[in-house]
Image (cartoon, protein in one colour):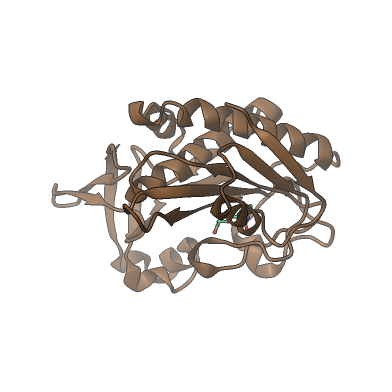
Length: 262
Ligand code: BTN
């Protein structure tokens, strides 16, 4: 399709900016890129640290004909696209930790937040904004203590501008390939190929434990009491099919549980 691009040195949030555009009738394909965000948004109402010279932050406006409850597919396509882009630009093999954490050397290198607006008339999705923040390199002064535990950079070099623009271009290219064939669900195979949990033994972290820290903190504190299982498949709705100790199969839904490889 036709992608139009707006680039900013600084913006509060590329998602917030684009949602405004979406609400005012802007058509699909507007891409907004910022080198810094002053109010970057993460999932679950968290902030997303978006320092200058640390990453690249971008959002794409979409008008998909999908059910609002299928918005997870958009996020997943973005994760697949980012992994492919990282491979093309840096030759590094990032992996996806279910459901959409992009990891390199066990550290999260990218955050994805899809937001949408549902039409009052018929309950369909009016527009969606998929926002992607890539931690291209460690910012000056380094990552803060909390962020350091979970986040890491894609590159260690200096040339953030060049790598950032290539990552954005490749990500959007890859994204559009799968997005344009959304009903075929071609992205599922690519997703499984890049999954770090498929075939592995995992700890199952339910919502009671979920708020108690990072997954590694939870595992080191409660590891013995956490349920475990082997991931044998990822189904068409991105459910994680896990075979538990007693041989029983259970399908885990994102949003309800998280997992960590053993
Ligand atoms: C998360 O990991 O919780 C999701 C983070 C999403 C961050 C991106 S950066 C570009 C876009 N604009 C925002 O304010 N958030 C998303």
